[in-house]
Length: 264
Image (cartoon, rainbow, N blue to C red):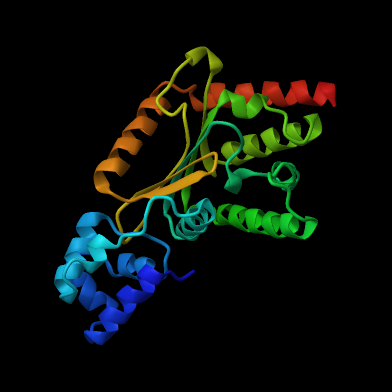
């Protein structure tokens, strides 16, 4: 996925006769960060953009023409999905439904059926394939490390019917039982918590700073400014500290799955 901004950065770098690594060294950044910006997968922070301008001698062009915050949510999602494939640790918070990488086929299909405005069956099938491809991250037994922090509403909202929900909750339990994911539930009894207003994904990488992706209705945003990312990490940690321990979380998932099975 390219971008006008990324293409222009690449053109200026190549005109200056610099490799990505050479530019990264001059701008005090990582080569992979430069590569992500040129490919349109990331937007540099204002400070990064200023350092790139200084390194390339481009005045204040890169810092003045940073992409705006109102980029289409699809663009942010695609960029976040690409980064997801490179992460060594992912921490998910879900407020309304199971995170994409943890969804079963039938659950994912039910989620995508509710798209608004409606999309064609062909487009739904394409999105379903993409969703299931993301889940293949878990085929590797160790990387990425995945934490799932779920609001209890995720367990209670019937998506696709009782049988689909029972299957989905069973899938989560199995992933946790084999140690592939760490799972915790924020119970209704807790009331207000620091993540109540949003869906959040935190990602860590081997060769670049951590980042976050937040999404709500008709809005999505990748955050890579260190201060913002740290604040979101702190919010996640605070909420996690108030969540049910793993054993109690799994007991709640099993009990809820049994309720769905009885009503199937």
